[in-house]
Length: 318
Image 1 (spheres, rainbow, N blue to C red):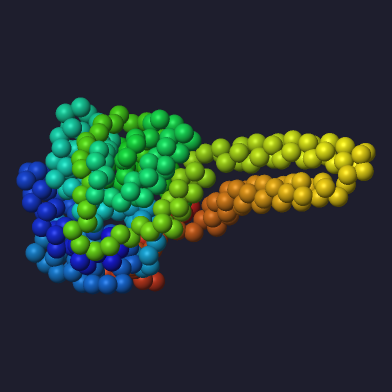
Image 2 (tube, rainbow, N blue to C red; image 1 turned 90 degrees about the horizontal axis):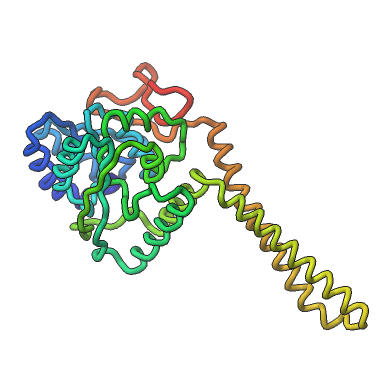
């Protein structure tokens, strides 16, 4: 959660009865992704009357996938469900997920958004484009319209934690594991309060991370663009020689100028694609943690020079 003070009361009101009715022991891990509003204060107040609530506060806003990683790294249950705090994914479906996982011995149960009528037309269009793109690149194993509302078994969680990826996109990593999976469909609801924390810029960043982190196809596209540009250059060369032979060099200026612009644009696109992959290599070589935990109520003390180190993806983890 990030700056979700407005929706927190409604979240607790709906989530707690669902988990209590399961009739099993549970723990709720609330990952506060560096909120600057009263989210941390409200969580602390709710925890006074809800001992199953565990609060993990990150030192700074590390991003949605990093916050998910922080929660998965510390979850200890036999089954783990990840859900956003905005209540667009219904907590009531957790019961169906757990029942399906137990009945069919599944390691993964995806929450599938069968109806997105509550989203804007632009949001539905961009989401459709995103899932079409990642399914073309990563394969049909990626469920269409599946976000980060999912159930994972302990085996699936441990497998994810063992992966070395730093810039994680769980929508692609989880299907890649190949564990037995099922689906639970639901209608995506509008936010009861607050505003979206996923603007267009973050959506584009997620798409770029998904593509560059899971496929080398963009590099092949760069190769194809280079080959196409070569053919265009070859055609322009023939045209230029013909124009020179017939003493019509001045009329050829427009096509030559257009050709130079086209080749320059192709080169910039190719360099940009290479830069994305080099940037990911640079990030991996730096080996910096993706998040730092400021406090964890399970330990009841913040991280400090003498406290156990609590961090995210890097060469080692404690």
